[in-house]
Image 1: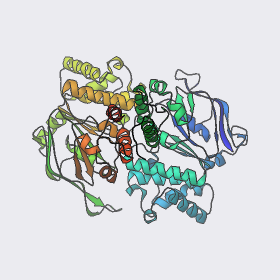
Image 2 (image 1 turned 180 degrees about the vertical axis):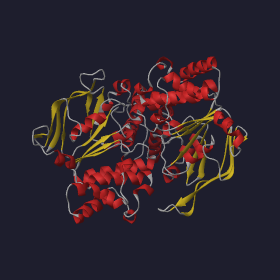
Image 3 (image 1 turned 180 degrees about the horizontal axis):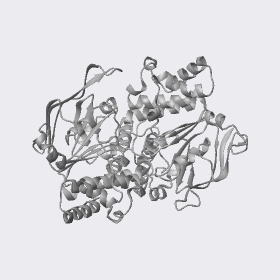
Image 4 (image 1 turned 120 degrees about the vertical axis):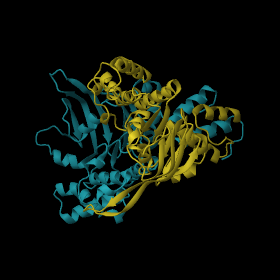
Length: 289
Length: 281
């Protein structure tokens, strides 16, 4: 029960003047139920990479193995794959089109060939999962706020009951509260359903707070792969490729340079606070709590 | 530079058939005064009215009530329109929607050319503006070869070439990666220091606001908070109520305070926190 990329390379416009290696020999495996973050600067290959995971883009070489089967094998059921590996694009609210919220969310399951009753049941479940209020089910999706529209768009993918959910920058353009609401909801979804979640983000703080593993992409190659603490230890290399560590990680490094006995591996506010309090109480000065 | 009194922007609310069913106020009784050369940040959740307010600053929108003056000129006066647009330049969120030239330097020259600036002068301005945002070495490149942060810097240069006294940036970094954000904010900082341009920055990134002279927080068309970054960010609960946040360093300092460390309020920067902790040790 996993999804694996084996030696994936992807070349745009091969044999022309525009030939470009978007992905170079990328391999990794994502076990079922993992919360994975993918980071990389604009143009690093993240979006191309995730489109391989549900067969939207076909690798120039290498294979994608989903639950033991090579998806490039003849006769492989791509439609089934796409409903199991759900992909939410950037600014997904631009893809809303139906007359009301519930019909929009029903679109996916309807295409899967489910009966109207099943569609509606799945749609309601999905909207509930993203915390969308029932009183707006019959409202036009275009009259909703940015954050609510995005919930509807995510529900549209969830209604197909995927086992893997891929979100490409789900919080871009949202205000801080909207951002926290969406990500908290995704985390809840992950814990409650055991779904694999893959989060692509430009916010190192968000990535550090939610995911258990990070893959760093750079120039089409996998540059780093590990827990947030492991990955953000390489903050200098990350800066060289246009990324950074969360701000609190920098605070920890600064404190160490000033002689504090704190671990530089803290990547969230909670971890950093714990470390600082521990080091303060160790150094003899009273730190209550 | 920018002065608004009881500014109101009202628009018709329509039903599905297009019949007017009422009026909505996107901006509702806003008073602001932004002195020349200052750096002002506007925060507010999606739909709070901050972009509508920004669009009044170069007369893309005209108030339906109250008055907006840009450099002393009333935006309601049609005769002043071009003057106002030249005084206050605007940069928007999406870099791909505001670049029109096929070569970087042509794009930057478009604004002054439209103003009827003589050719020699245009080239001088293009060079200066590109230099100011650190993009001079890419002047002959095609804009579609640039990263998001670079495109935004070209867009800023395009505004600069019109020699505005004031530049309004509406979420210029929302679509950029961390490096792109750093580049754009760095370029804006340079402008303030070297060209003394008044900067109005609308953003959702709390870290970008730390150096502002004043911060305004908007909610349902009103200004609900106003002060220095330190004053604003020491009111964590109020900010959260308006769907805003505080910089991560401020949040960490707050967390440590709530757990008993005797830290001062309103810590904004890394070095401030580190210094304060060193004093406690």
